[in-house]
Length: 165
Image (tube, rainbow, N blue to C red; front, side, top):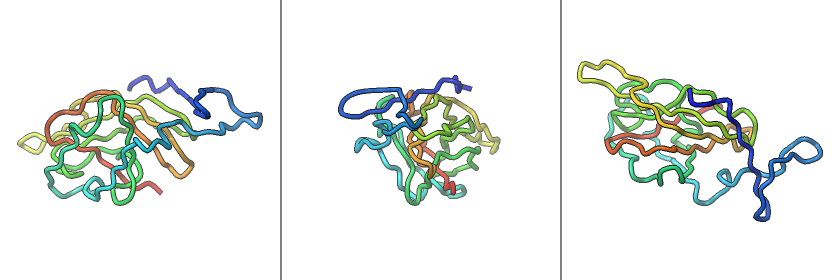
């Protein structure tokens, strides 16, 4: 696992950064990535489809290490946390993670996102490759934002979402 003990809390307000809680122990402001209009919303239903073949491609739409994204609408509301089935999530190579995610609003954790691949004989490789990533919990409703710190493969790779109630 990728240093899951490392936790960061940054709070932005009036162009200042603080890591101190308010007097009641709560952090009054969300991290910038939770509210930024530059955070990409993934809404496509094929991201939450675990059985249909597709040829979608996410490579190139993220500025490596600088573009946060979230799942919303028909794409789900979180990154999938179990290995996707073959040809799931609109591609032959879907990204997912079973690493620990933040549990407190505003908390950011480092984790690994995994690429699942399938060979010609349908053998599953759930953790074929791993990519350094970050996740921030933005609300008590399970609204996470994610950052892929390394470049995705240039093939038909996609980010796989799920609905979490």
